[in-house]
Length: 193
Image 1 (cartoon, rainbow, N blue to C red):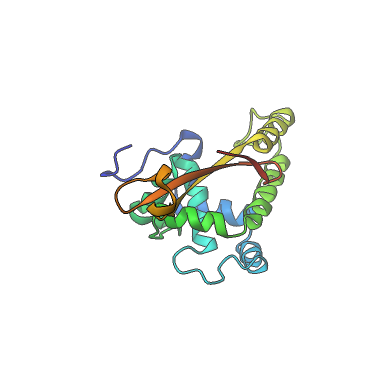
Image 2: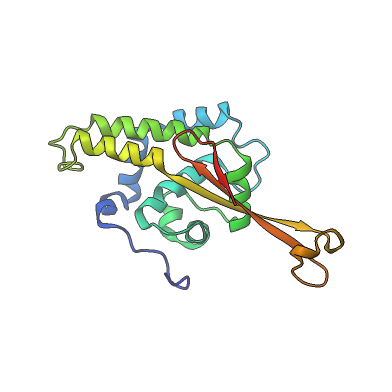
């Protein structure tokens, strides 16, 4: 996806939520803003935050579902896409800063919100407009897939060249990349590379 243009390729199933008014109704209908704020406070998500705060980041993650894309697309969208700004997700943070925040801050508030969203989806009647063709077995399948999800995170470690000839990048730097695979179901370490 070219970065010179605004990210506007919204998946058809989310087109009704692109409007800021509809987005607010959906978000506050499923998870009231007071509940989101209480979770962020309970887990000290915003403690010492400089550029990345819970509420705009949560809004960015929901907005990213509309367009898809990578962590880089999310970072670009938060900084430049009017769709993100209209949904209260305007933040300027680097991909490295975003990755560091994801690694060092609690994931529990997002897991609680995910639980609430899945429960809300489960309560939508099968005759409802949004999930007309989705039955209980399909929703259970979605929950099972979420449990099977593997999340990857990679961190580059810088080392002095004197002690790491085997990892020398250039004359003055050496380093290696550690990749972790986390299990989505229980959130624990699944494998390291």
